[in-house]
Image (cartoon, rainbow, N blue to C red; front, side, top):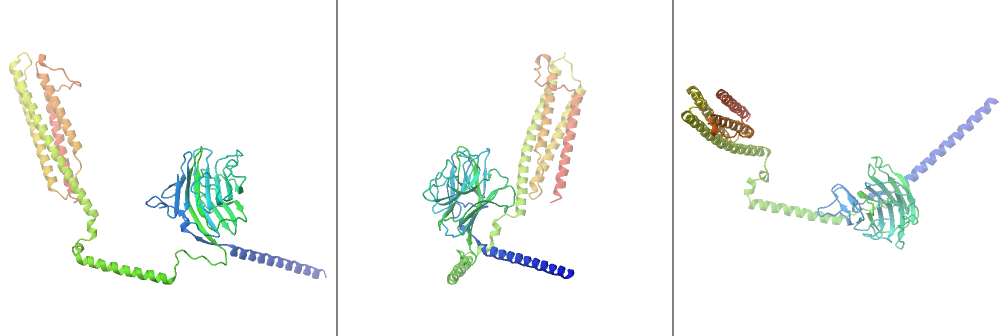
Length: 502
């Protein structure tokens, strides 16, 4: 008996659980079906939208939009107002859409240096374009709705920054002193200034209900929206203009709009609106026929032009442009010409140095001869010293002549090698050689001054050159000559090695 009672209780509990599960499943199915039915169809409307990059045309305008005031369009955004005092600007659609239901997604930045900004930014849907005015840069007494992003606390209640939804039938004047709180249909407090990522606002008007969702810009997730405000039973004009405006006052912020995307919403079960570009089949066939005729006429004219100008076939358009190899050869040839001119200039300078050196040697020889004849009380130079001095000068002449010959040979090789490789610049090295020759000149002047009579000696220049003996002078000249010859041989070998690669 007890067993039968327990079995009855188990059967009752099992049946009750089954009923609960079935009712839950039926409710979930009904909710899913209802949600699927209420989801509207979204269609992107490009004529009432803008987004970078390549936002601005060549004439500085935004396609399908008009900007006024201090608005500055650029390639990737529109700066509604810059961070200057008392600025106003706005952008509006050129045409008024006749959407029964719509949704807009606006991406913007409000940035400023101060802890408090002003005045704010507004998103509009009105029956007329409010191009200029004192309500965030747009006209007052509008007919439609404005979503205000108010940055400055005018009423001193410390409830800003705030987002307000303010409707108007064209007769109300906006209450600036109270920040529009007395006229707001819905509002929420959100700080939208100086965020690490752009702030996004999704405004939906569907079945006479306006909903505002906000992405505060704390994360890079574009779909991280949260609820801000909702207004039910709201009547808006059947046709209206979309717009964005902003204004600054004593304080200022940069108000930048990165994108404004508009979508038309269609209720489930209703016919989806056709695209603006859809045309009847007859018109399509007519346009296609005109296009084919135009293509045939174009090909015919091209053939006639080719027959009348056969010489153009021998010179295709590609020959007008310089290839990579041609450009490299041209650069090498230009480099060779520059080197050729530099070596010519250096050769002229060496000739001048050689002549100057010869004059100084003659002057030293004549001065020594005069000193030997006229001054008996001064220490006379021995014939061995004079002979050594003259032989040293002959060595100098010899080395300089060899240097000149080497330079002439290098010049001839460079001028004959028009298609060879580019040679390194030698200007700095020849400047060093010139400096060394000037040192030799200064040492010779020192010797002349030392051998003059005491009463005729000039005051030493500052800095005074060091006095060198005859042996030191010869050693110096020999070392300079050896270094110069070694340098010439080294450069000749380097040039010969470089030419092997070409």
